[in-house]
Image (cartoon, rainbow, N blue to C red; front, top):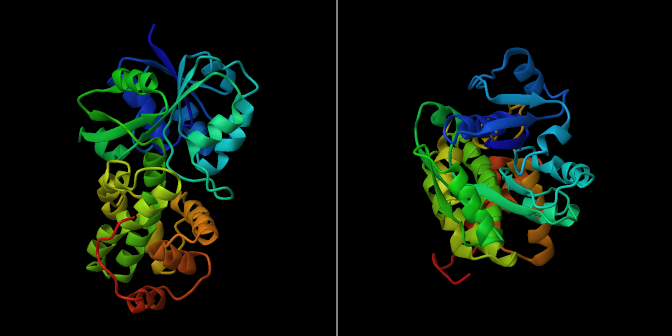
Length: 323
């Protein structure tokens, strides 16, 4: 019997379970905190605003049930991931494969998700990460897209890609585990910046944002030991349409409402990631003008128009220089 586990029944996690069931032929065991509103809705109605659960998708209130599977997808808020890893480490996970489908950095440490899991789970496990564009709403309309899978083990990448490839999602083999995670996390930050420009109705500046942001992100990726060119791949630049323009993007919508003085009221992973980026950029002296300006607006409540205009008074420099 083909079965997988899933931890996290939010919008993206539930879709990945549905996709594994509908397109890849897996029975899916699903877990979330029993008090989670998303989980309660699924238990009561077997649907959410985006999809209905298929018959071979089973909900469990105990994570141990899901951990009976050899492959487990995890899709939860990044700031809760370390706590989950510590909980999981209490179980026998030897030989199991985990696919991490979250995009963000831990706020207090600026660590990425693969790094956190390897630190907290002291067992012989296999870990891969999923990054790239795609919204549940588009996928449910049958609109195809592409993603990248990365790992520090070639066999694990190959296993995940062969398990989950379909005509709806084209998978690519990643070649930069660090860069793909940093790039995926930071596209959320850039999404907030794009939303702010939308809120200000400064639409023409989004082109410049798209041109300059991958250079800045590449600089940050290099600091972590990754390849700065990964910023131009699926995990970052390839996700710009879905994050910087789409009405479905939580990060873009957060930025738009922020610029208008309105409360978004939902999770925007780019907000804590921005804080993590600022922490490292200040500590290591990394030139991150977009993120620094964004931080001033979001966290220090600086006037956002004046802050953006202040970026235009910086010293003039070459457009393309070596990282």
